[in-house]
Amino acid sequence: MARRAVPAALLLLLHLLPAATPDAPPPSAGGDDPRCHPSPPRRGAVAVYPSDMAQLQFLLNAKFVEAEWFLHAALGRGVDSLDRNLSAGGPPPSGARKAALDFRTTEVAAELGYQEVGHIRAITQSMGGFPRPAIDLSDGRFAAVMDEAMGARLDPPFDAYASSVNFLLASYILPHITTSAAVGISPSLIGFASKRLQASILAVEAGQDAVIRLLLYQRADEVVAPYKGHTVAEFTRRISDWRNGASRCGAKDEGVKVLDRRQGAERRTISNILGAGDDSLGFARTPAEVLRILYGSRNEQIPGGFLPRGGNGTIARGFFQLA
Image (cartoon, rainbow, N blue to C red; front, side, top):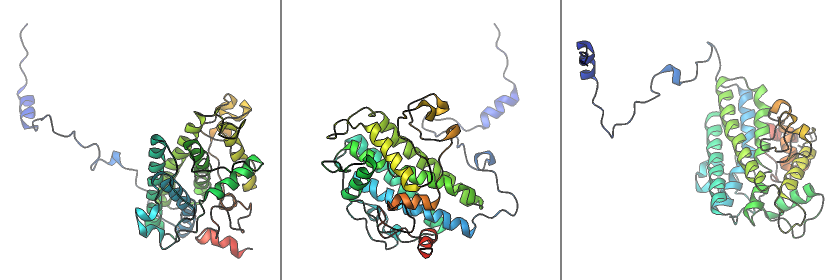
């Protein structure tokens, strides 16, 4: 069969194209292509409103707790070892130490800790910040939470740093709080840059919560040593009930297994790897609820718990003025 002649124009085009080499990188998918960037805001839109700054700064209270918890548990050192400026002169956490973790759990904890550092930096650089609040991450603090959650004094006291499963159960307490707080502030944000930052933080924070919940779900039926008869699933259910009680605003939290399928996704599952409400929408908590849980006092005006001297920033300090 006779070959077709290649048109002269095509030959010229091929000649003008740069020669491909095995080591040449692929063409960039970004650059100046407008389809690779978010649509510009409407004319006259404002990037950040003053009220936005207070709302996003409020998240720093929980962010500092999470960052110090994950970093110390994985690495034995905290935020100051990475960037001393981020703490703005606030005191280092008390009671934090390296946990006895297996290799994979150490990797997860370190990654989550590094992510929290990034979030703190993003908030402070774009919205302003405040000094790191006083934080209590002692084994006694976590033991007190577990005793309250389980409705009995555990013997021996729960040690959050003793093992990978204990660390995961202690970690289960925290990302849900920040995730629900980020959902809770979303209706109040006005500026387009503020909304973008909140959504970006929420995406990662929700992922952190899901990772911890999945790791615990994989061990759901495992008994938490040395507490005979008490499984991982029961611990998560009771911690969730404790958060609901501390917040004083109804049920906005569930364990990694539900006892009633009506609580599962589309009322069809007992697995609850992604905790959510009706129509599988994320739970939202107000700043007052968040502080009630972090303080452990059930009162946003009475500090304690993980923040023994209270949270910092306009919103958290404002509750003290109402007392």
